[in-house]
Length: 39
Image: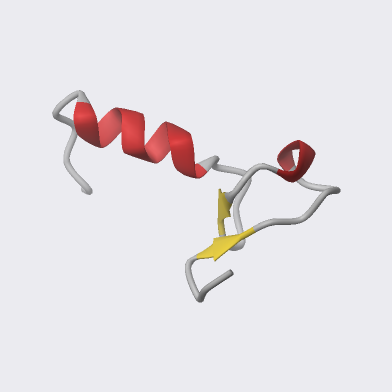
């Protein structure tokens, strides 16, 4: 997809994840929307 996001059917059931991790992109977006910082 791009250098930071990957989609692989064998990882996280094919959900978009942060590349090299098993952290779903939707979880990162939800955390930022709730006021969490990048740090």
